[in-house]
Image 1: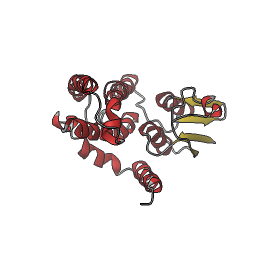
Image 2: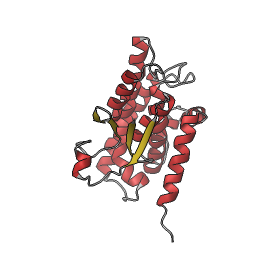
Image 3: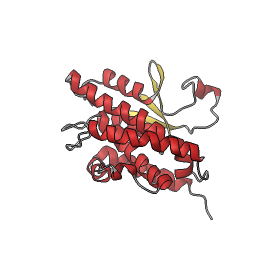
Image 4: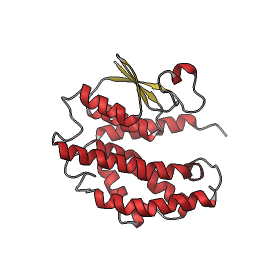
Length: 218
């Protein structure tokens, strides 16, 4: 049995969780929060990051490494194209979204989502400059016809499902404008398409339940 470790608000955790559900793999979940990690956790995920996956052969960390493991270990239900070039294009989109969009916006998540106060002007200027270059580039790569990489649902959609809402919402909170929407990327319409999938509905329901459980009484 596989055990997915992390928590329901983590976009990278939910990317892996969606793959497990879509592939029909039996798995358990173990809630592990980020922050100061115990030595036992560091033995499984050396930077204390989530998600990490406990397998019969040992632990794995880094979400895309886990996705690759699942694809190789459970090939009967592929989540990448069997065409090598098409699969590479799907992975290209994942890499682009995570390296050039989500990782950049993450620098202002404190301001956008966690009440950390306004990020330093230099940080906001740097984030905005990089996004102003990367978002049009992402638009050139993405298909949205209807899925992000083309006509087939894939791992690229699992990444887009968890990352695009954060990118759009964070830029709206920090810069006063949703930079994805401003660039002509209809991520909300796309999200509705993906949200109709049972895997997405389960993830959204469990994320909502987790958020409700974290609300402290007044």
